Length: 312
Image (tube, rainbow, N blue to C red):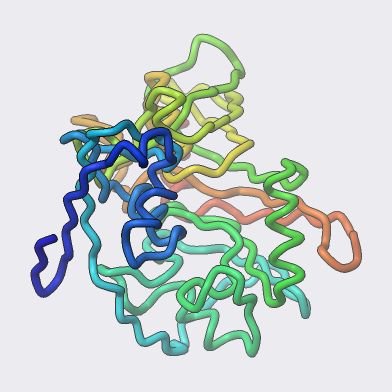
C-alpha cells in the first residue's frame, strides 16, 4: 500500500483462495472498508483489474489477478441549511416535488460543497428521509447538474421506501423532453443497452457489454421533427447515470448542447447544458395511494431553442 495526504492506493494479488469470489466481496474481506463503500469506488472507476478499468462489482476473480484500488479520503462536508429559493410543484407532510433548475447540483460532492439542492432542502424542511445517508437526505432519485425538471423528495423514511419501490417496480413514470441532432428513421423505439463507466475516460459513462455495466432501458418517441433536429419524448424504465444522454448518443442522435456526449456540433441558441428536461413524474402517494402526476414546464432556454428551430 502507498498513500499520500489525499489518496490511498492499494495493489492486491488474488490468491488461490480468492478465485471465483465477487470483486466487491473479496475487497471487503481484504480491506477495512464497507462493502457499500467499495461498490461506490468500483462504480466511480477507482478499481482496476490486471491494468484495465473494472466497473462491475460482480466480476468473478481468478487466482493471480492483480487488483489496484484508489481510495479518496472521505469528503468532509459541513451540511448547512441555505436559503436558496425552490420552485415547489407539490408538497405535503410526506413528500414534495420540485422543479430543479439547470445548474443546480443535487447533493454535495468534492467540487460542490455548498449551494446544492440538499442545502436548500435543509432550510425548507424540518424533516427529511435519512435512508440515503446524511449527505443525501430525502433524495429518492437525482438529476444531472444541467438537467432541469421534476424531482421528488421524501420527508419520511416510509415515503422514501415506498417511492423507491415504485421506481424499481416500474409503476412510477419518469418522462423527459429532449432536443436531439438529426431525425430518427422511426417514430418510436426502445434502447436496451448496458451502461457503465467509460473504459478510458472516467468522468464519462458509455454503452458497454452487458457483463461490464448495468442493464438500462430507455423508451423514446418523436414528438416533433424540427428540420435537422427533433423534439423527443423519453420514458425511463431504469435510472442509470447519464442514461438518456448516453443512449441518445449511442443511436446517433445526441442531445443538443450536451458538453460530454456531443462533439463538435454547434447549437442554434446558447445553452447552459444539454437540452434535456424532466417533464413529468407520475406515482402513487406513499400513504394515501392517490395517483399523482406532476408536470414541470420546460425552462426558458429550452422554449427559446424550440422557437428558433420552428422558425427555421
